Amino acid sequence: MESNCKLYAYFHLFLLFFTSLAQAADPQTDSLLTLKSLLTDNSNTLQDWSLNSNTKPVPSCSWSGILCNQNSTSVISINLSSKSLSGTFPATLLTAFTDLLELNISDNSFSGSLPQEIFNLTTLRSLDISLNNFSGPFPNGASSLKSLTILNALSNSFTGSLPTDLPLLESLKVLNLAGSYFTGSIPAQYGSFKSLEFLHLGGNLLSGHIPKELGGLKSMTHMEIGYNSYQGVIPWQIGFMSELKYLDIAGANLSGFLPKHFSNLTKLESLFLFRNHLSGSIPWELGSITSLVNLDLSDNHLSGTIPESFAELKNLKLLSLMYNEMSGTLPEGIAQLPSLDTLFIWNNYFSGSLPKSLGMNSNLRWVDVSTNSFQGEIPQGICSRGFLYKLMLFSNNFTGTLSPSLTNCSALVRIRLEDNAFSGVIPFSFSQLPDISYIDLSRNKLTGGVPQDISKARKLEYFNISHNPELGGKLLPEIWSLPRLRNFSASSCGISGPLPEFESSCKSITVIELSNNNISGTIAPSVFSCRSLYKMDLAGNIIAGRLVHNKPKDVLLREVYAENENVVEQEVKRVVEVALLCISSNHSDRPSMEDALRFLSESHSSRIK
Image (cartoon, rainbow, N blue to C red; front, top):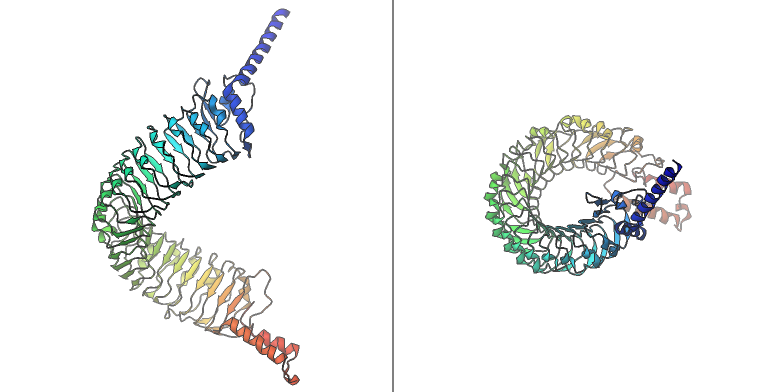
């Protein structure tokens, strides 16, 4: 019996020795341990990379970021993404991984050159080195990765040209080289990818002409090549990319006309060509791309009118034509689009009235037609769906009264109607606009004073009704108690009566502008309860008395203007006057120190410094 026990013990010792020997001898585990020792692991994310009693043929199969095949005999995936690792990446240690399908070292701080040895991993299907700081030229040899389907090198610090051997990768579907400081032009060879579906070269330092050969990418569904400094025009051959769904060539210094051949892109959903130098009119043919969801042609030099054919874009959600030189009216067909969500046509030369049906046929959320020459009234149904949260109509020639239907804009957060010719009373019922934070109605012809229920606007931060000379009425003390109000402007509004007492809850307001009204009385010391207030402009009113100067130290108030005269000039003149008296040759004209201080203090009767 004793001999059997000894034999059993020897067997276990032998088994433990054999297992330890096998673990130590596993080349993949050994390579990973060496890799760990060479990297800086700032967050100790590889703490479980160590040998233990694991009996798997490859002990590293149980480590974080490591995936093995079903039999746990070989590593097929190394995923070190977002592990706060740094240092140079020793790719030579990976030669033992003969079955590796995925290598992901993204979102770390690896630096130095990308080692060419990484391309010896010929079984790779996915290589992700994005969001690091690899520098120097992109190495040759990637064409040896015959099975590669994904190559992501986004956001590094490479120099030199784009690698030209990548088109030899016949299985490649995703290529992302964006934001990595590549220079030179896009190689014409990039039009010969056999299977490429996703191409992102945006945000580099590329120049030259966009090669017409890109039109040969028949499998391409998503192409972003903007935010570079190309020369020349958009190749019309891009219209041959029949599978394309997403095209972004924004901010690319392109000139010339919009290609009519884009009408062949029958699957296109998003077209972004903003911030270029495109000119001419928008081709009528673009209206035949009925799959379009997002169309942004803003910040160009486009002229002419909005094509009537755009009425066929039933799936369109975003239409952005702002910052161009377009004219004409907003077609009724645009207002009829059932999916329209965002309409940006500001800073053009549009005129006429807005379509009466605008807002009645889709869930409009954001409308900006400012800085044009529109006229007429605001469409009655612009908020009929209840989703509108930003309405920008400023700097036009709109007239008429503000419709009470604006109260139906229950989701409204921001409304800017300044610099028009609106008349009548302010129709808002603030209790029905629970989220309103920004209102600018300045430079109109409004009357009737500030709405009585202003205290219901609990989220209001900015309220400007200045330069409505017939607005009239009195200031409501409830204004000061709005918990988020930072800026209140009501200059040149014909407001009369006293300046209301400030309440202790006026802790957010920073600027009060009430110049050129008929406000009378005094500035109450309760103004010091407005702890964030640093400017109050009461010039051109009938304010009397003095403001107490011993303000609390934590009050920010610096300037209170209560006169039309420039305050700085006034202060300087008073100081000079006192100084001249103090050095007068006639000793009897020299004021005492007490008189000099009293004279200077009078200059502060309505200003705190």
